Length: 214
Image (tube, rainbow, N blue to C red):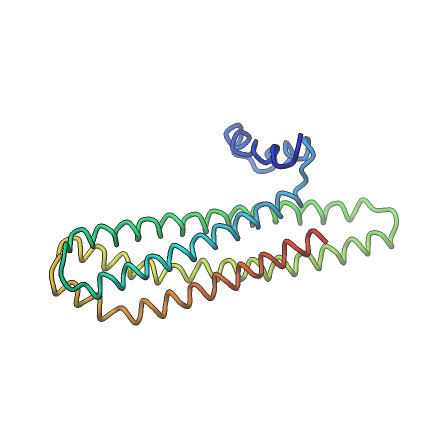
């Protein structure tokens, strides 16, 4: 069975057990080691971040549209902003979940790797494997730091969107629009900061995947 097909079994395996160790063991029995799972999860985390970048760009444009509202159907405009906010929340949840999945398998991989170092009878090979472990862990720490930093950047943007969506919900009037205009520059700066952090994390993920495949 091809690796792509095996990875398709993941949802089924997850319904069979909530225990990570059992899951990883089951995957290894069908020829997929923790290293490959880690690479796959980092790629999915990167993809989730790329989706989040596009969504927050879209949400920002809709925020600008509402802030610059100058006649028309205000309720319809609000509904569009609310939809953008809800999609942004969904993308944010996906980013957090993917990051957690990466962290879970990385911990299992490093724990296994450390235990296996004790099994070597050849000191030279053990030393080489130990250096590889240290290098992989260093690169992973840099990756996870970038991923969590990007994840943390989502909060201020979402909070501001949420506040104004809630305010607009019950105040579809000029005063509410004015409050958005007053926050527009701050929202732009926070969103730009978020996108920079996301892009840095995406680049770090690409480097990590490349290094794990080399």
